[in-house]
Amino acid sequence: MLKAAGLSLALALIATTGAYAKDDDDAKVPAKVEATLPTLGCKGYEGLKKEEQGIYEIDDAKCAMGTVDIKLDKDYAVILISRY
Image (tube, rainbow, N blue to C red):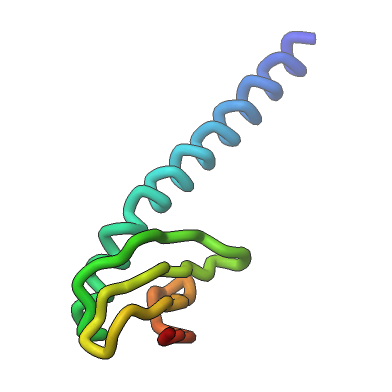
């Protein structure tokens, strides 16, 4: 019984550590997006959403070409720009 309790505690610690690591990465996303925008001639945006499979959607980015929506891959490379 003691071994089972120790194993449960170890698994709980591993799961908690993984959750904190993910939160740290998620906290860095807006800063990485802010660093990407000037390379596209943009200065700001209205919203940011994380979509499935690590794709980020930037809503209403204020760019030289007008207001656009931008999709970035997990490495913050542009995969789509939609102008409206």
